[in-house]
Picture 1 (cartoon, rainbow, N blue to C red):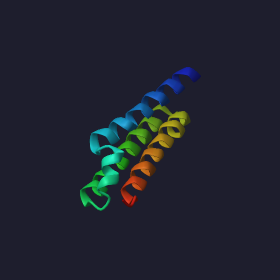
Picture 2: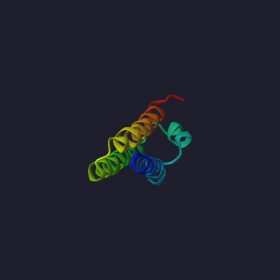
Picture 3: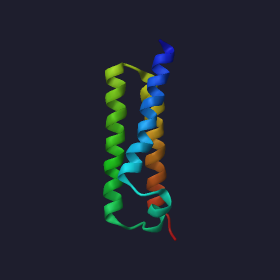
Picture 4: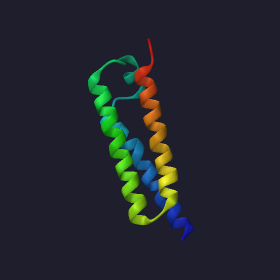
Length: 89
C-alpha cells in the first residue's frame, strides 16, 4: 500500500515538468525576456494547471504523499520561473 502511494506521488510529480514545458519556454529564454506580459500570463496558467492536477490527484487518491511530493515540485517550478522572469540582464 505504501509503495502504491509513493508510486502515484512520483507519477503525479512527473506531470509538473510536463505542464511547465508545454506552457512556457525554457528557463534561459524566460530569463532573456523578463518583462514580457505573455510570459507572466503563461507562468500563472502553468502554475494553476499544475496545482490543479496535484490537488485533484491528492483528493481522489486520499494520499498526502502526492500533495507533499508533487505539490513541492510544483512550488519549486513556480519559484524557478518566477525568479527567472524577475532576473535582470
